[in-house]
Structures are given as structure tokens and as C-alpha cells.
Length: 158
Image (cartoon, rainbow, N blue to C red; front, side, top):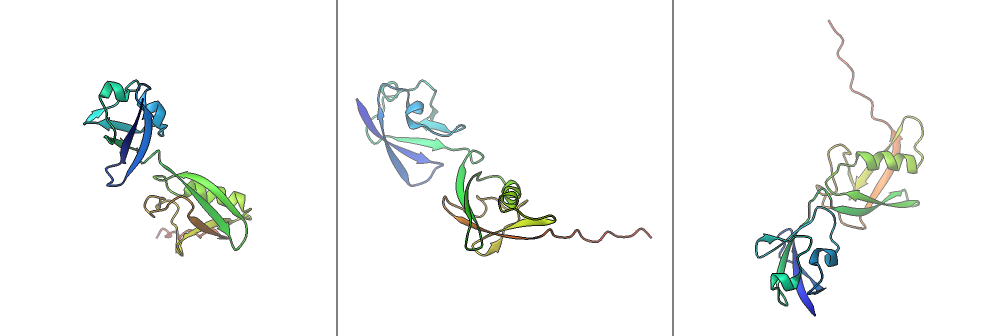
């Protein structure tokens, strides 16, 4: 027997529907990312929980909590009007790794770095994250190659 259940993610008002077999373990059927927690009527589901064992019915709501550190987004980088590359990055991590990978991919020369821009604004790789910039799958990051920023002058001892 199958049920049509609803999934509410991270407390959102929007819900998605999913059809599941009542006798099979629910978590295996939903194929959620690692670290995801699912609750029903306030109780966390175990790996072996089934809809039949939970007395679930059609249109019952299951709360899904996805750990932000695990959520990934697919973005594209683009150099000028040409070469694009897709990258799958963790939403909660800064852009330091992507900036270095983009510099390698676009063959930045000695002393050059990749500067990343999103919606016309410069991304600060050590501070900004896809989450802080509200990025979604398919968003495009423009790349420019240029000299590495120079370090501020050091104060001379008196």
C-alpha cells in the first residue's frame, strides 16, 4: 500500500509531496542528504521506521531538518563572455576554495588571483558564503583574473 505524505523542510510553509510504500523504511525511500533529521508528531524517526508502524495517513506532514552545513548548491563560474564551469559547493562554506579552484581552472598567471563577482558585487572569499548571498542552483559567478592584492605596508619600528 502507498501513502501520499507531505514534507515540510526547515520549518518552511511550503511543502513537497512524496509517495511512499507503507511497509518499507521511510528514510530509505526519501533519499535525503546525510545529516538530515525527520520527525513525525514531534518524534525523530529511526532508520527502520515505516509509515505503517507510525500509523501515518495520506497527507500527514513530516518535518525535515536539513543541516545547513551539508546543503550544496550548484553554481557556474564564467570568465568574460566565454568559458563556463559548474561547481557543487557547500552553502555554509566560504568561497576560499572556489576562488583557488577557479584560478587554477582559468589558468591565472603568476601573482594573479581569481576575483569572484555575484550580481555585480565583489565576493569576499574568506567572508561570504552562498548562504549569505542567497544563492540558488544555477546562479552564475563572474570571474576576473588580476594581480593579487598587495599587503598593507608594515609599520617600521621606531
